[in-house]
Length: 625
Image (tube, rainbow, N blue to C red; front, side, top):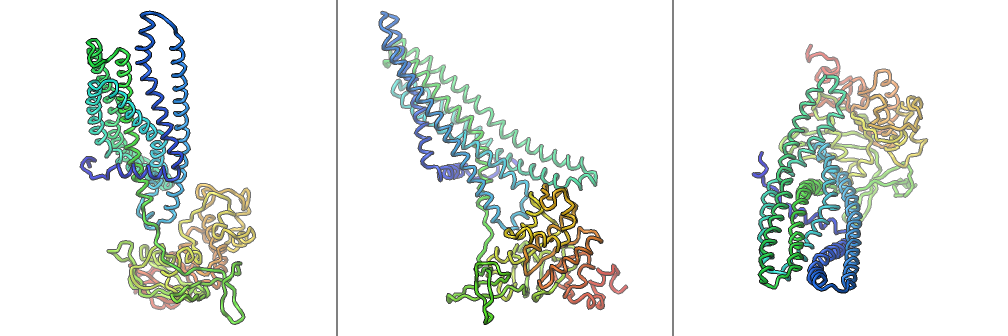
């Protein structure tokens, strides 16, 4: 697709938003920067205008008649002081801009991460993680360069152009007109070349995100790549993406990089034209142009066209930064996960009359705090009673994956979901914790519609062990404590014993203080799963969701873990998803799903007696065989 035919947002609003973002927290510092830039530009201008006095008032009179060099020395000392002040101003605004840019980058990264944490799961399901990472790294870095280098340079150039223009008009209007004509030609060149590169820079940033996403995907799947000997295939895919990046970067920089030399040479032509025209004016005495004024004007001509060239040079960085900024703001503008819940989970204690009262200390008893429209409050004991009533759901609004789901789980029951891959087992558990919201029907938790419960409180009442275990960089103890951050070491150890993880942990080099990195790469898959079970155990939730929790554990370990799991599930409502049907034989109710519908339900014995789909899955025999 040719970028010039794509309709892209104007960079103007994006640049204005970047400036507002910068100035938001640094108004005073930014004002000081502007003053320092003005001081630096005026100091340079003062030195240029001094050339006229140097030649006309000092050098020519001294050359003709000799005389006292004292006034010249005093003028040079005065000029040196002006330049010193300009140097201090230049140092000042560059140093302050470092603080502004780094502070702004810190705030930007925090806000990006905060927004990412607030996004719904759906966003991460539909966007490549490597592409999101590229926003944090490459796109944010282009903004850093813009703030610390390009913007100060452009502001300085703009101030220099304005001050120089006024001085040129004061010296000689005809030569000023020649300069303006050449600058207009330079601006036309910048507009044409810069416009052609802008769309390609947007493609470059997008292609860079694709390359980063592919690299991350291949790193995560290295074992699979090597097992199936797909190194060449993955390299071929990388080469294709890398070639796309090369093409977009080549096209972007092809136009941007010739911009500076084109404008630099147009500036040289402007200098030559002014020199020829000014010499003719000075020799013929037209317009009162003196030799000193001509020398000053030619220097001003350079000072006028050079900032235009510098702006052209920075245009490369500005256009690339605008492409990156658009991706950064696109992420920041994503709608956070919506939560209209108002029922909260609180610590409670039971009074003598059986009523519940909210308290600050942890008592092991929880209650739902439910404010009503009439201003009253009610407290409902957290028990783990879950009811699905005619629930429909689809990841895409146009295609439902769950149809008319009806189920109930009373406190302490163990409910198992079985069925072929894609039947909707995991989807049901995702609805309980509101990773996704249902299309139709009702889900009630302890008699309360879960839409009324704050999502953070709802999820705090649930313990989850997922099939894909994720461990964080930190010690074994810290990973277990992730289930409940205020848990003591003793509680973490007890949870590990309950899950059957204590034995292998104590054989690690530093026991519970062993550092885990790379998602627990130094542990076996079964050991990582045991830690995930311990993490759920330390949370001590009333409701457990076990999604293939023992799928990666060998048969011998499974027998040990199952004992711990049975102890953990005692008194808790538990939803179990398992392909290994032997692990759900003792479930209170087994629900068989097929194509998003519950087609069978009952105990293990009841379903075996029916000789239906469950019988087929359990025995491996065809129905009716």
